[in-house]
Image 1 (cartoon, rainbow, N blue to C red):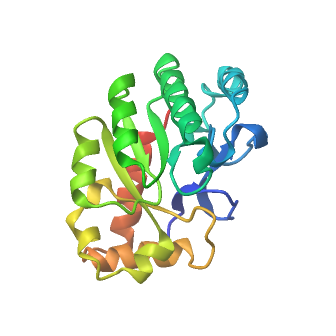
Image 2: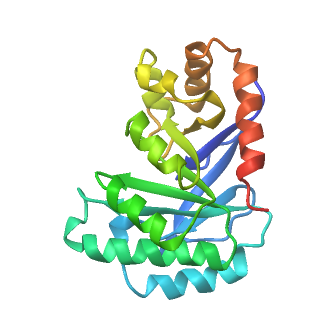
Length: 219
């Protein structure tokens, strides 16, 4: 099996192309993997916006820089700072526009309406990876009116929802695979399950993911 792409992870895995997500306060130089940096809604701090911009100035032109994030809104965790989450999310979208960053990784829990409103306000209309997506097709259509969207599913979710009509209703050419922080199911199993679900060979899924990677990659 060719080298597999993990579109959103917090763990290095040998023999894979890892896109590792860093919160700005925990960023370290990346040598062999692709990376994203952003301010996660669980760890909102005002001073991080300045820190993020300073970091972007030195990192966003690197060949291994993949995009901005993960960022977004979460009404379940850190809800007491939900207003601040919205302000920081908007500020990050403005940085994406300022530095012409074409891909963002979106964290969204119970907050699609606010996320869509802020996207409209800022005018960000490029690529959005909808990390660990659990919404419905109607919500996807609302995002698609604003941006180029790529719903991303954990390998674990794909393997345990192989009969889900929701997955098959989404165009295959937009679906991504990730592991996030969940190592309970291997990335290989996720690719195999997705291939079976869409009646494709695993090699076809690998090639499709590589094509999407090339479209989304910043540099």
